[in-house]
Amino acid sequence: MSKTYCMNRSRLTAIGLSLSVILITFSNINAKEKSSLPTKGEKIENFELKTLDDKTVKLHDVTKEGPVVLLVLRGYPGYQCPICTFQVADFISKAKEFKAHKATVLLVYPGPADDLKSKAKQFTKRMKLPRNFKMLLDPDYHFLNQYDLRWDAKRETSYPSTFVINQKNIVTFSKVSKSHGGRTRAKAVLKAVKGN
Image (tube, rainbow, N blue to C red):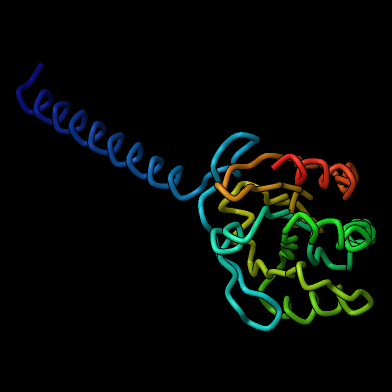
C-alpha cells in the first residue's frame, strides 16, 4: 500500500469520526428541545401561553392558586371540532364544582398562527367561559411540539389530551387520546381534582 493511500484513509477516518460526533451532539440538542408531557406522578416544567386578550398565562403562577386542569383541544384543523365543543360544554357544566376545589381549567387551542385568535373566538362564541376557565392559544403548534402532542397529519392538529396538575406542579391525572374520540369527561377529572 502506498504512503499516500494510507494518509488519505486516515484523513477520511478522522473526518468520519468528526461527523459522527457532530451528528450525535446535534441529535442530543434536538432531544433536549423536545420533551414529552410528564405522565402521572411526574413534575411538569413551567410554560406560558397567551389568552384571547393577549395576557400571558404561566402555568406555575396558576398552580400557586390551586390545581390546574389542562385540556388540549384540537383547535382549528380546518373546521371547529364538534367533539371539542361537546367536551368543553361538559366541563363548563361542572364549573362550580371545579371552582369549589379552587381548580382552574386551561383550554389549549392550537393551529396555524394566521387567524388563530379569530378561530378561537369563533369556537367560544356560543359558550360563556366561567372565570376559572382560560382559553390559551398555541400558534404554529409550539406548545404541542414541545410536549410531543402534535398529531402531524392532514387535517389534524393535536392529540386531544387532559391533564390535572397539582400545586406542586406534579401531574396527578393524564390521558392522551390518539383519536378524535376517547375524550375525558369532566366527572372523571373532578375525581382527580378532589384527590389533590
